[in-house]
Image (cartoon, rainbow, N blue to C red; front, side):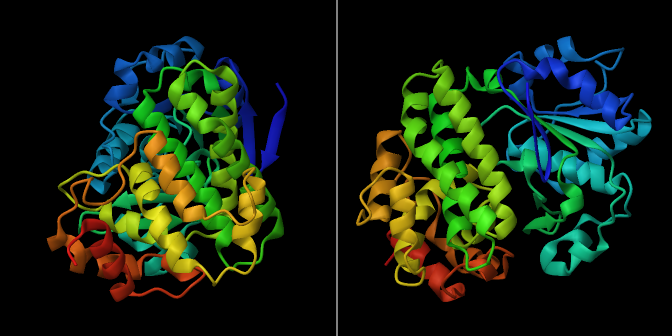
Length: 379
């Protein structure tokens, strides 16, 4: 299989999981800690990784990754990493497992607390190159965290913050679409819309980065053309491959920044109840944010539409709403169970999120509150 070298080194294709030993050897990892979740274990994917692993590393597993990764879970994994004298990590799962593994890789070589490394706390400069080596193996086509520089974590103080550094990009990524063939339709839909939101938001940010914009357009094209096929037929190999490629491209392009969709979804992801899926939040929030940003992005809506095979005068917000409905995702925050009582705190958190600064139209707490009130139906 050919290697892709952009930001990091990626093995991409059906069956490349078996090449994991080559990456372990290249990074000098002899005793990896595998970071995953119990759903991955139950689905049999951990056993498939075991079959590719050399040596006697099977017992070095942390499988308590929560849906939204937490600092507490990262510290528990760190204790295991140190107690077992591990020398690297392998993350197997969706964005939660990969983001948590990044936090462990950071804390393995940097002092606590984790909060000091958050971007909004000036943490980028505090992260040195010597983080523990990490190999990321995505089992969903969503976050793109396998090639991304960020880890979004729920901290002990209740904030959900981004820890951002090029040093956090996994040293290797293994993107094997075969691992996604059993993904249920709803999770396929939610993770696919997560990837699409990365491509769209990154493309729309005002940051000047032409290569990232080209990658974003190509990723959006692949996802829009194949997402419904993968939802309808999870065994569609071409659709699974193209979705994983689009998700990877989404992770590559958000080096350019994100926007208000993620500013608000990060905030809402910090809620203890209800526990909200990040990709589903992005799907629900994308249409209202597209309407909010209209008139502030030049000709980019037209260029996006053309890249996705649509007429240049397509109403993108309406198109995304229709796509969400066709693939079985909720329409509003009300449908997701978000209470109106959460609006004031979530609006303030969103306004302070690192993604808010790169939204194409300036947005503050009251704007976020209005978006949530419209979506919850609280007037």
